[in-house]
Image (cartoon, rainbow, N blue to C red; front, side, top):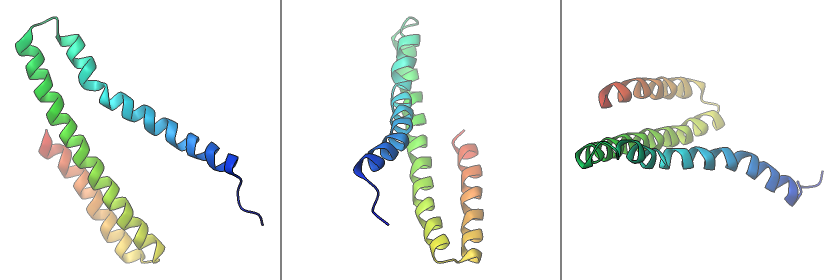
Length: 105
């Protein structure tokens, strides 16, 4: 069996990368769009929206970091065929993703 071609790799990388890049662009433009909409109200309102956007961004980064780290550990459990550890850790992941949003809000 011959290895996959370079064209195959680029196609799959773009199929995965374009939605991720689009999502990142939309998330990063959230503060800009908020500022545009609120700029008509006044400077204090824009400052308040900026503070709120910063808090939202920090919470999103923390959830993304937790999800990424936990995904790596879950993949290791899966690769080791440790179903008991996988279930235990998956329960922890689900619990953290339920508790964290209620803590932030």
